[in-house]
Amino acid sequence: SLYQVSGPVYAFERGFTRSLVLRTNEGIAVIDTFSDEHAAALKLSIQKAFSGEPVRWVIFSHNHLDHIRGPAIFTGAEVIAHADTNALVHDWPEAGKGIATVTRSITGDQTLLLGNLEVRALYMPYSHSHTLYGFYVPSASSVYAPDMMFVKTLPPFDFPDFYYPGYIRALDRLIALNADHYIPSHTGRGSKQDLVDYRDMTVAFQTVVRREILSRGVESPTDGPALREALRAAYAELQPKYGSWHGFNDMFVPKFGRHVGGTYLGY
Image (tube, rainbow, N blue to C red; front, side):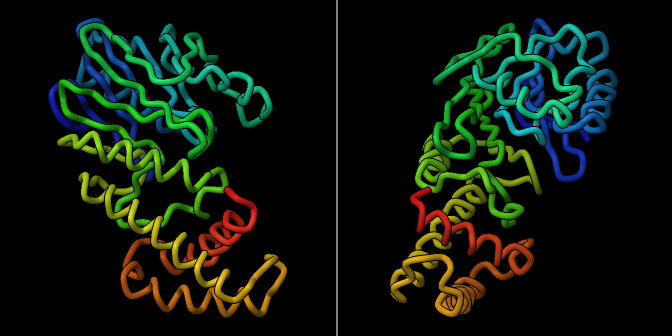
């Protein structure tokens, strides 16, 4: 479904994924297209809601393939993304089929003027990929938080591409905007408080897992018995608060392992 968030800011959600759709006086901008199926459904919804208004811009929030498949359906659109995106996609020739080439490369923070609409692309280095952007539309007090906001949900396999200190800095930066509307790229719709809760859950996991492995003198992730003790202790502490979150039991072990690995290696 395509729904209005605020003013010129819309969102299109299909299953697990949600694109940002921006309506300007010169056409439509889309942030993240996800898949061929998502993009095709998105195009039909835009044509129905905004007949005669072309999609002028497609923006990739970051280089991960699950966010950037399908944009070729928007013929003639300018494709905007981090300067390293084309090279990173080139490394995956089979998976990258149907992904449009970036035609306007950006680095660092950028203010994008899309028709009459100002969009602030906020660079989040060393977080979830080194190409990640969040997006702030000041006139609509709206923030798009791709892969930086999950509503009462543990992310799948806790993001193999994830640098904990930088990720928390990214979440804190979005929270500090104090916008009226926060839009996640996955899971249910939410609010600023949901982003705060997700940030606090991520910190709680890191804090508890780090404490449990260091208190046991775990010097290597090959110390199976000690890690099993730490896992049980961490589960007992975290489950009462976060056990009702979607995917908690399914994703607890990979999330625990991810935080162990990050603590051991420094990421």
